[in-house]
Length: 580
Image (tube, rainbow, N blue to C red; front, side, top):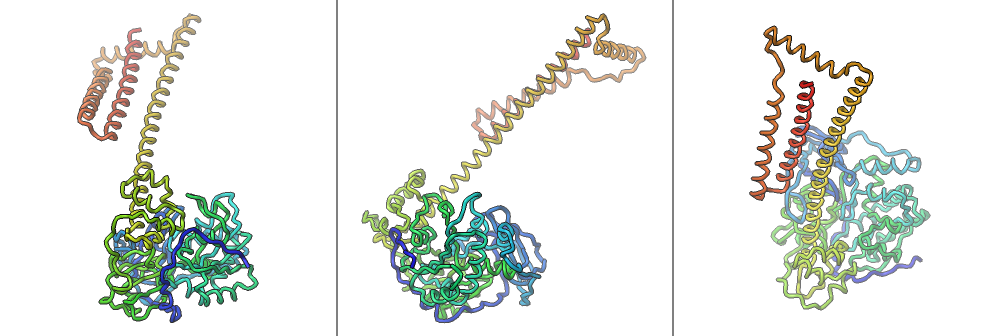
C-alpha cells in the first residue's frame, strides 16, 4: 500500500455532504434560454463566431479561442442567437461581461460528430488539439485550459499523473457522485491522459469519507495500473499543491508549477470531459452541479447545460427563497455570494449553495487582531496570514510579494479559525487584484517606452542613412570632376547643368514663363512649420502637459529639423551648381 504524507495546517469543518447524495444524478433538461459568458476560464475570453438571429446546433462552436491560454465555446443546445451583449455573470465582483444568449428550440439537434477510432494511434499534438477544440477547462474550480496544462513545458518530462477526486469543500458532492456513477468514463479519460503524457505512475487520490466512490473506482481501475489512493479527510486536501504533497511527499516550489517537479494534476470531471471529447467527439457542453442547502427542498446533483440560469436550477430543486438570505456559488469556504438568480451555470460551477439563515449566518463584525497565531497554524501553504493582513491593510505590495502572497490558495482556513472574525481572504484577494493591475500598468508603460525609443532610433537611423547618401553623392561628384580635369575632358554632371541653364535661357527668350518655383519658398514653409512646432513644444512644457504629448511634440520638432537640414543642403547644392 502506498504511503501517504501530510501537509502543514488544515482544518476539519462540518462536511454536510450527505444531504445531496440521497439520489442519483438528475438531468436538468433544456431551459428556455441559455446565457454563455465568453470568459468561463483562466486566460483570454473567447471571440464570437456567430451573429444575432443565426440558428445554431448543439455542439457547434459559437466562439473561438482568442489566444494560447484560452478555449472555444460551443452551443449546449440547438436554437437561435438572441443577443451578444453584457449580462451578469457568476463572479465575486458581481459585474456584467460579454455573453452569447441562445433561445433554445427544445429540439436539441446535434451537429455531426464522432470520436477517434483508437486514441492510441494519435500523436500527442493531435490529442491536445482535440482537447483544446472541445473547449475543456479544468472542472475542479480554477478553470485553467486543460490543453495548456497538459502540453507542459518544452523538454519537461512528466513522471506522475495525479487525478484529483478529493472534493474536500463542505457541501459539494459533484465529484463524489460522478465517481460513483461514471467511474468507467473516468478511467477512459485517464487512459487518454496516460497515453498523452507517458507518466511512470498514475495516482487517483480520494479522501476516505467517500466509500462508495472508492469502491466504484477500485473496481473500474482493476488491472489498469491506475492506483486508487485513499487518505484521511482534512480540508483543504483538494488543493493541487496539498494533494501532491499528500500523495508524493514533494512540495511544489514557491511561485512554481507541478510540472517543475514532474507532476501533472487533473480533476476527475476533466478526465470525463476528455473521454467525451476524444472517444465520442462531444465538446464540453454540461457539467455536474450540486444544489444544496436548507433553502432547497430536494438537495441533489444535476447534469446541467452550461448557460442554464441559476433560477431554473433552483426551481428544479424546490427552492424556498423565504428561507434563504444569500446564494453562494461554490462551497462555504471558497465560494462567493451571487448577485442574483439569473446568472448562468459556467464551466467552473460545481455547486450552488442555498443555505438557511441559521445554517450559514452572516459573520459578526470584525474585531482587532489579538495575534493568537491560529491562522498561521491553519494555513496549508505555510504562510503568515497575520503578517499578510497587516501588509494588505497598509497596501505594502512589495512586502506582500516578498511574503509569497500569490502562494495563497484562498482556501479560507485562516478566516475560519480567526477568533476576531477578520475576513482575511477578502484582504488577500483585493491585494492580489491591485498588484496584478499595477503589473499590467507597468507593462503598458514599459511597452510605450520601448515603442518610443524604437521610433527615435529609427528616426536617427534614417537621418544617418540620408546623410551617408548625401556624402556619397558629393564624393562621387568630386571624383568625376577630378577625373574630368585630369583627362582634360568635360564633367558630365557640369555639362548637364550647363544644358539646363541654356534651356532655361531659351525658354525665357521665347517668352515661356513656365519655370519651376524658386527653391526658397519650400524652405520658408519648412522654417515656419518648425518655428510653430518649437513654440507649441515650449508652451506644452511650460503648461506641464502629459509626457506622451511632450514626447510626440519633441519627435515632430526633430523630424522637421531633419527635413529642413536636408532641404537646405539640397538648395545649397543647386545654387552651387547654378553658379558654376
